[in-house]
Image (cartoon, rainbow, N blue to C red; front, top):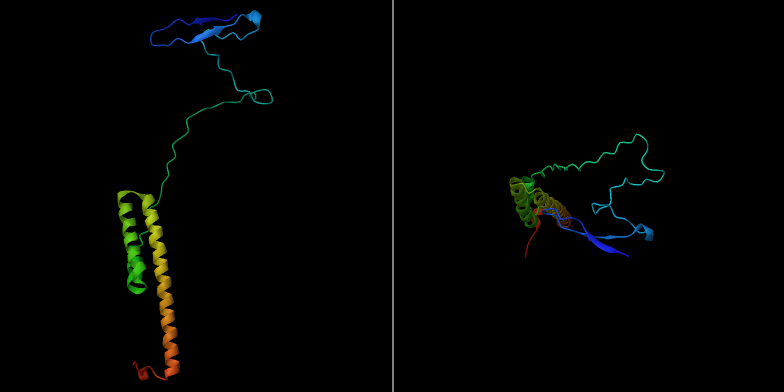
Length: 155
């Protein structure tokens, strides 16, 4: 039959009930402190190898050093003037955002703005080159069929 017993209360500690079983019933007899003693971990094959050192330590803090993105503002201004100005203006704004984000130390936002500005610069270059190529083809077509560049009449 089980009977409830309590540990003696020390100042600042709480008492936890323990159920004591008689050994005649074959029950588990808890240790006096209320908690079972620590046991070594079991490893298949009979435990730890002879002479093995077990070392435990706290994980070290990882420090990640991130390089700030390149400054693409001058390139954005160039493609705005020479290629395609609508996407070039947005590229200037994003490149300026990236520059100010690097100055305040927000490298994640700076990298995001840099990638957007770089994409817009590439789009501006692509549209600019395509428009120059189309202009050359149109001029060649007009010169071929009109005979002279000065004989074009509008009207």
